[in-house]
Length: 494
Ligand code: BGC
Image: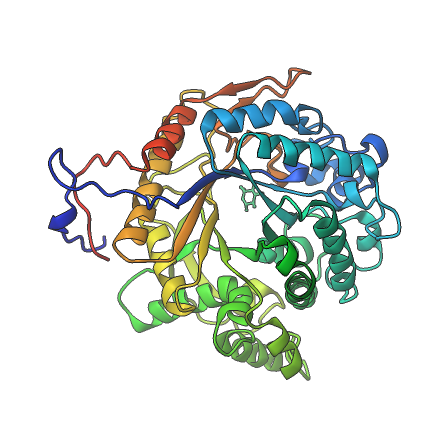
């Protein structure tokens, strides 16, 4: 249990000063193309790796479902914008489906129905003063690009840059906030390292690190492209979204503290250190650890592909903000390396992760309601990377779909309170917060069982009727008042 100190100046009471989010702080909600759009082969869209995997191997999804129709936002975008308007959000974070715009993934053929769809959505958002925040890549790689190797193939960085150029040309007059990648560790470790995400390539400890290098180079290429050719005219910002749980040391020992730092560095720092640190490159602890373990495994060089000086400088500083996706916390402690070490990212990391049985659960084993973890993570980022502009690009709570979603309200209230303390008391440079998600949607390998939406979607109804849950009113009030209804009066210092 952390120490709590009352911070008397800010004690919340009817007569005391109330903590408010700054006037220019922005609130939004997020979705992603594959999870909501449907229209998987509508008017010219090409196949992506999720279409391919779910159609060819339905068992890869727990309930054998797929995103063929999902929330049908491909047809219901106008309805979705009305839901956003009702919430009063400042921005809507959504992603572009690469294969809807470029069916083969390559820039020689643009699918104008796809262009039309995103133009409609963007224009409708702007009509209601809702800023479009666009993620270029939220996991739905065109299958054609996967067929030639996907992200572990360094050439994919160039195809991604070609695609980004098409997106800037088409939408950059109206889109002013771009996110290159959503959660690179998921793309690489879950997609190419033996996890449960498409394309499910199982070559752990090799293919995931190759993927990682391509992603870092691809991100930097797209940043430089924007910076050199679009920024002056379009005047937007570009960043990347990285995810991690907060790793709290399980006890006060140096070993546990080192283990939790290692875990943060290898999961968040893998991406953030090359881009946001002063010296660039992968975190030292990560480089040393993988080199040492590779040697023990009889590899002649480290399995982590080297970044040469030119690449380090090319990647360093390539973001206007860091996007942070955060859902939960784990307790981390030291774990000795086994005698024979199987080749994988998780064996390279090799720490023990547990949860406190007293933490409030959710419908997902990996999400516990531990609000103070968000504040600690934001402070860690502040100290590690000189307080960069930070957007919380995802935070949310899975349940089984109750309309009176008190679990979600409690979770959001707790996390927003800690965020407010991070902003006002700790001066973390956080400018935006995003709830995942606007709608219940296709939760990747978990199918449709887990629900993250503020709005319920009836997936057995062909019209995909949307219904507001109780959390809609809750979030709406927070956006309007910029204040968190603190139950308990204390404001504490970390
Ligand atoms: C992803 C979302 C996903 C959410 C809940 C995040 O990792 O960006 O696409 O639905 O977590 O699992």
